[in-house]
Image 1 (tube, rainbow, N blue to C red):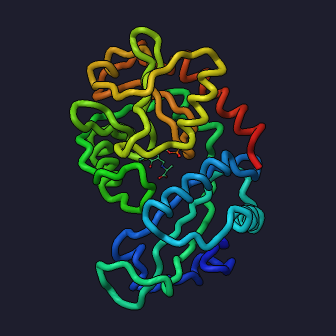
Image 2 (image 1 turned 45 degrees about the horizontal axis):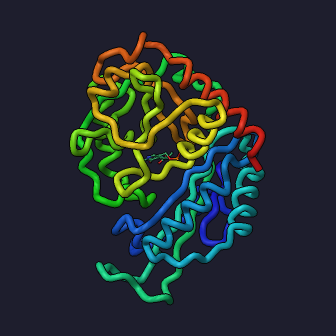
Length: 285
Ligand code: PDD
């Protein structure tokens, strides 16, 4: 049985309970992080903690744990669940004010803190050999996609629509430009061989894997531009790929049924995936 962390306690998953008035449950008033684990160690811990702090601050949710306390909790979860490879999910909600109200409660309401592990094969993911197929769908999310909230219903609906269309996932389109995937950042290597990735603004989540990937691209002398790209540019691209904590760098080989490049994972995405995995092994803590 999995041991989870909830509000100061490590308990079996079937003993955990959260109030029906918790604002995470009633209003999706909560932020989260997903951190990958390889060899029993956390990948890019500092990056994820930095973004958690930013999400909390954007939502004015009190920060009740220090980075060192979080590290101890996550390491305990890894040890108690014998997690070698997979993910850690952590969530902070505004807490339980004892009733339903749209207005935020006062400082006496303590945030609810939850974390759990998920076993998953990240390194030898067969999708990295075949590449993913994506379909484009409208980006109808709210205007603060940069805050990592648990308000994930639209992403979930679009994943279901992509699945119904026979694709692996969806890329979202706003104002004729691709913003990002439902749960990954989207990138292309365009017809000129330049890596193009949407700039950091409120339309996309500021991916931690994206940041590491772009800095590795710099080291590999891969030139890149941070700007939006259109579906037409993506379809004419040499390569396409996504990044996230759960996929690392993952090639995309079909968009709306059309092959990208020759329809197989390209050299840039393949090199960046390997570079990211090497970097992750070296830097996991
Ligand atoms: N999703 N964009 C969106 C909308 C995301 O939900 C995610 C992550 C990313 C990639 O961010 P990062 O590289 O920091 O994982 C981009 C996680 C994995 C999830 O919700 O499961």
